[in-house]
Length: 191
Image 1 (cartoon, rainbow, N blue to C red):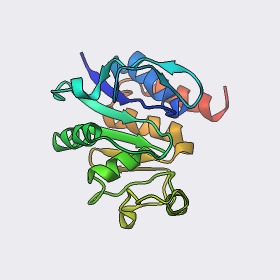
Image 2 (tube, rainbow, N blue to C red):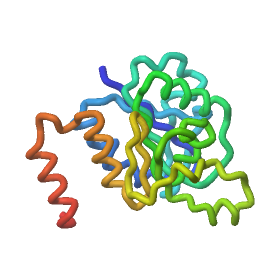
Image 3 (spheres, rainbow, N blue to C red):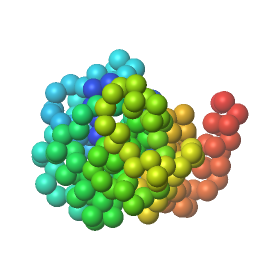
Image 4 (tube, one colour):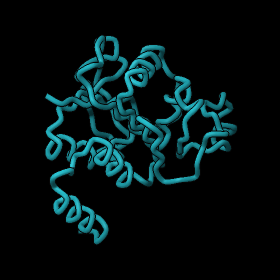
């Protein structure tokens, strides 16, 4: 069975990945495996509660996964377990898709040092928070979505574009072009 990892953490922006997860599960037939630092209940930004399937420490082998989705949320500290997982996935060229502020985790892991990316987190916000900037700003692009090899990054407001970038990368609609076009039309026409 095809599998996708999804990192969830306190106050994560669940709305940014709802469409993506729905279509990965129902059209792509992926099993979604949620991971967090612990298996404790997570309260999202919207106030919904989520129970992670596994802690990051339980993910020993990444070979069965085709991607890792990281939704946005607040700028926060990063544990070594997440850094190590990101590096392990990247070394195997597994897709890593991060939206809004989530590219912070990729920046701290060092994988944006030689990759183009985008994020919703401005340099001004980092200065306001009085924290070390996790981003190599010289590689930043002012784009809605940026794809560089196996890395997909997006601004938070571009969650639909982000979803379709992941669909394209994983060939979700490869034999369902008419369904993809109908979905796009529905979204664009607010149906």
